[in-house]
Length: 75
Image 1 (cartoon, one colour):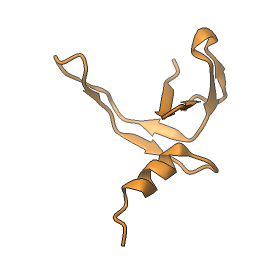
Image 2 (spheres, one colour):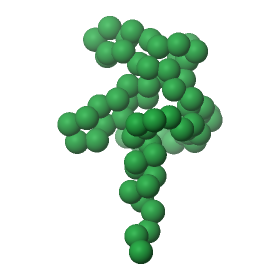
Image 3 (cartoon, helix red, strand yellow):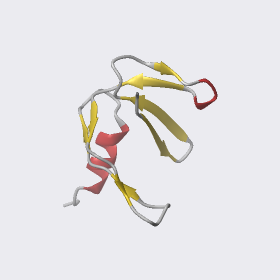
């Protein structure tokens, strides 16, 4: 089994997987390997909301790093 993560920011979309290599998912696109680990998924009765802890490693151009930096307080 593999997990795919689709990250969008405006018109930009990235596809990543924590699987040991990239995955060609056909119509969903190609998911590139990146150092991502996840915890257990929490299911709720509200089908619009599920929670999961993610641990995302660093890599050049990571949209996760930019999101994290954008949330830091500005001086």
